[in-house]
Image 1 (cartoon, helix red, strand yellow):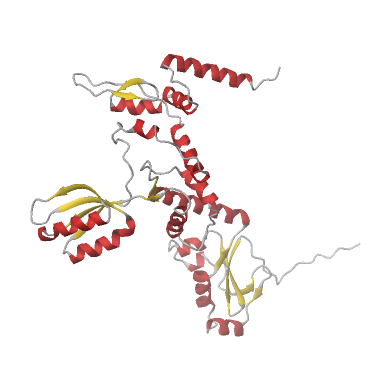
Image 2 (cartoon, rainbow, N blue to C red):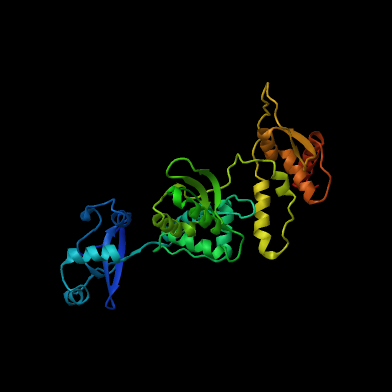
Length: 358
């Protein structure tokens, strides 16, 4: 029995294709491009059109190989020049991607938005930024959805405005240096007081005094307009200011003794505080300065003197302090360092025994 071999001689199959689709005047037009080249073209990295398009042909359906009709091209684009139409579809069309690829892009953009939000916001109670995992959790709680056609920075600003409606979060201030003529310096100081700006330093020497302040980002345009009217100028020192890690540690205990909110709205913030306090960082050896009198700091949680400022900061990262902090939440008295280590070992042994069934 003879077999006939059927070969589609006149059929051209496009493989490894990224389809860019544009709907205009109710008609769908498509072009066949190489994968990973469309985004390079739109970001102006790739400049050779032949490296982007698989063919300078406009289709109505790429997968079926159906070409677009000339009258439809003229009606939609006003011309039947294939190259010119391909350029317009490449710029304005929608890139068709697979499900997993789209999910990966959205996940990456979601992470970028959360990073921008973390960099631009602080906790108003601690004046410190939230962790990236906390920002992502809060974004999920407000049911935020990524728009791939909008920039990450614009979406991050929208997320900040939405988070401020439900959680204690605010924009981190900008640090500015303002220069004005001496005759207008008092006017500037009064305006900064009305804006509740934090004055860091003042320099009234010379013909053009200056002041360094921390100002809300929403007031930057008003501040710039004011300086122009006062014949001054603005110098941006920092776009986003967070509390310095080397800030004064004398008030850490006061922050620990603040009462925690018990409302449902404050639960994510309480969890954030516990996460920040339970971060596991290995404690370094204590070092003391020789020949200098150093102020000794006392930890109220552990009821012990822990040394100078550097040792005080390292103490807050130690297992001893974290263990006593857990006891403090259960209204138990603090333990000395030796008893704390024994109590921790006993707890680890009990946890190991739970993994076995006798």
